[in-house]
Length: 256
Image 1: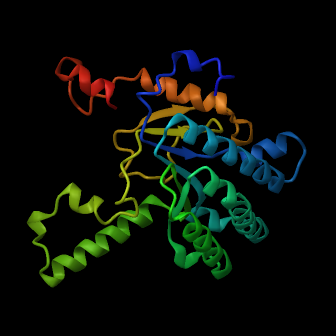
Image 2 (image 1 turned 90 degrees about the vertical axis):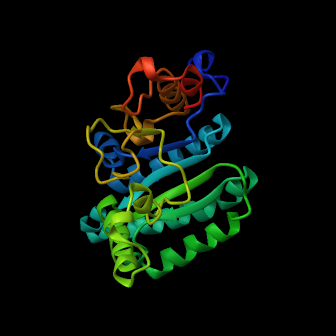
């Protein structure tokens, strides 16, 4: 990362534990170049590799990428099929490097809607990297936050119906324990590329207090340098979690 002009102001001791990214702009990147939308998705895969490397080098512990939403199933069948094949082939191709870089792969989403071939092959990649102890790379595939929260509510309701839990004892922690992300911390930083100003049904519960970094840069053009810029800007934010500035412990500010 020494080639980044932001490295001089980047503090490696204050890296966000969990960064989530809405990777937007692949189709518009391709259209602007007179290319088919699929070419934008192919180029976007190259950016995934670069940003995963940058996150690992920076010391990020969790990186969640919004890879394919449940709403994306409504796209033209040809594009959906191409995306599924591209996701699988890209991850299979990168698995050896993930292992080499000690990156563990996992997924969150409604897997019941995924083609069987895609789910099985991605599970194989997850199994192959399960021993890795560095960065955890989470692919949000066939994912939507409303689906996730609905599923959590069904699980909690079932527990209440069976008498395993008293409804009055349900807390935010109870809900969090039944989300797909229960084994990871909430994102400290949410990045959205492509210029839009919305969260698109992504980690709605988990990003309640996330810092947000928006850029007009399309995902295929998003570089390691801009990723480090986002981390550096995050380090300049004051994370109050509902408190006033005066209430914050200086040590807490350094440990976000």
